[in-house]
Length: 77
Image 1: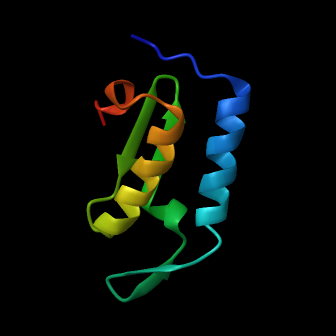
Image 2: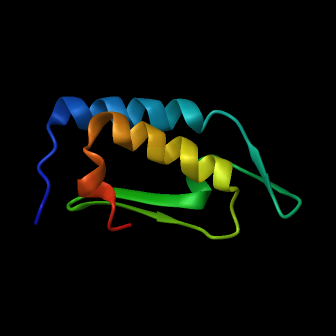
């Protein structure tokens, strides 16, 4: 089932992910932008996350998505 997300919701998600990306995280001794650890798309809504990145980052991203997209629609990650 394809999840339809309004342009307004997409803009809010993008803004929060952009804000998150303004800092660096340490991954195996290398400084990376958080966006280098995941791929997010809305058609259909899904998140792919690099397994060597911190679980705390994954949780922060999932929290952002859950604010705007019902959890049952993002659970097939």
